[in-house]
Length: 519
Image (tube, rainbow, N blue to C red):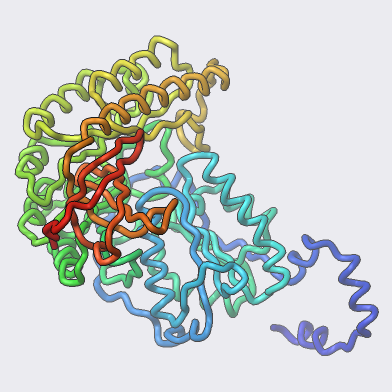
């Protein structure tokens, strides 16, 4: 605060005049006046983010909360809203861990929060619209509580257009940071608290690998374990390579140590996580070590269930298939995004495999793992997709026999090659194609579920059903949701459930009496 500002604050203004002045001041004017904006140079740059530098990725083991902010959150509360993928969920766990170590406590009530972070997703336009809607809803709260810190982080923060929009229209935001500098959250919070200016720190360079970050995980049953960051595939529709940076893998020993630590804490399932998880290890220069090797090492650890997501067909190699075929704690459910059944569309998407390549991969997987369950992601309405090309997606869906699929209408993302393409397919046609595809997905899901009726399955019990607190819910090894009645002591354990009813997306069952609990 400079001398002039101190003089202005010291002036005594009659109460009546002050109330009248506030009445005649719009909320935007008040925010502009009291929450000043400073546009720092550390803002996103898509062109820079596109470039893949040859700089060595550094691994840091020395993370610590700086002493000057170690208790800054004492007596205060934080709230993090998470949008998007599992990677964002994992990032939220890290940010929650950092804030907790700074003394903050979690809350689910925005009115109680002293710091609110929106951890955002940039994959689809709808996700961005939700975030900007929430930013708008938080404006009155910021006016009511001027000391409240509101931050926007995650993938949207890595987009130039998003940061520009926030700077121009949402000056009640205090803090913008990206995906590469989460470890700097203590310093950023300090600057936001004491600087009273908007803090913008978004690195367009790829981040290093920061180990030993604290985490506050959701529950004590299932855990995400990040094994790599970034993506080098540059699919023409996808913004992720620009928001998450180049592929960089954690060292195997660090991952294995984390999994062993989770086992010691009683976790029953881990999911190995990466934007392109089966590209793991391809960036190592000193060792030949891939996802198959890592899965083989974790196969020997005494944890009941191990999954991985999300894989790219192009990197799904024979070594990984060989290791997965061992079974045991390596589950026979594989999520394998295909995106389209048309080789022409796949080429335009820069997926670098054909329909035939994908089907050959499926054949190899099924030969090695006969009971495998396959699920996928599919985009309809890619620019200029023809009816014939869409039909190829429908026939691929049937030929592979996917038991579930995440389906989407193509959403153009600014800064991607596909967003520059002219599109002659009407929106109504795209919606109709999505409807037809979803009908087929529902049919195949329902058919797969029917095969479980009368069978006994092993269910990892996660807690109460969302719809009925008297019913427990959990997932099978093949990731099928099961609802059943049983003792609450079953939560966190793997129990046997006999399936009595099959629905399109879930199974109902009865817990087997005297079931042997698997720990």
